[in-house]
Image 1 (cartoon, rainbow, N blue to C red):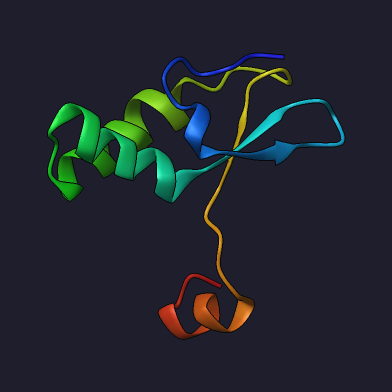
Image 2 (image 1 turned 60 degrees about the vertical axis):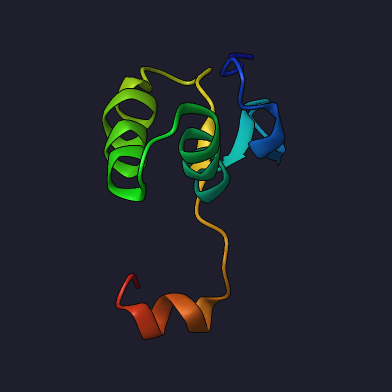
Length: 77
């Protein structure tokens, strides 16, 4: 199981395949608070350096939590 350093507070569980599951919004918040990034920088850093580095089955899963209705209203579904 692969674990991201410094992002323990964003862990929300473990998948059935034994991968850690992280709340993506919490990861972005950590980057903003810990590293002094603004929201755009933190989101770009997440997509390029965290989500973009996933290579294979053992890497963590990143989820954006929210209700289905919220996702429908935002156009994400």
